[in-house]
Image: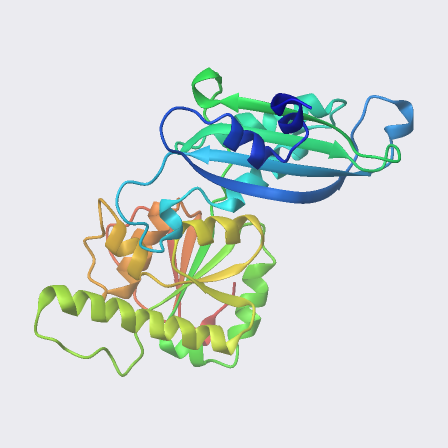
Length: 306
């Protein structure tokens, strides 16, 4: 059996290795990702679901500089599974070939992606797996910019009195029932942050003080998950997770960072709300800042009606 035939039936990762492009490329892979979906051109495939299996390899440009264990610097695995989810959600398809093209196009819309190997197999149409595999290179794909219809979240800033209130879970219940994803923001605890006497170090200490209070809030309600990166927040908004913002990474990584100091936590939260194009921000138990780019609503702790 020739090498070409052997690799034709190998896993996409082996095909990628056997057909390397010039220059070193990194690879990420998704193996044996099974989804139940209605797909197929035959009448017997209509009105019923069947299992299809995805194996995907994406070759990406190596990072320049250290990774620094930073999820926002890499092409996340979630982007691969999201490409599959979006392609399946667009409309009912007859052909695996069409589905594979859509998955590859969406993956190659990512700036790091160079080449995509997409294998899709039907597992329930016979004694074996029936499928297709395509290889696409970013330079050869004419795709429109990806429009993911990003959600516009609701933000709720909670003062320390609100965090300690017996009504906290009730407020979260009410906000979670609304259509938009929910992100919670807090300031530092009433004890405040240690004072360093140095502007740069004080900024980091103040941000960490906010994060300590975020973990305190998460302990009050198990639905609340502390998140610190844009990748985590994007995933949370798309999957119905209630997030509590830990600000250090996003603030310190921002090219056009906030003018608000961490000690002015409501103004900092309003900056964050604007960067994520929030639909509104509710402030419970604190004063509203001036000059924000997102609609704000202040509610005293004792008079909360959501």
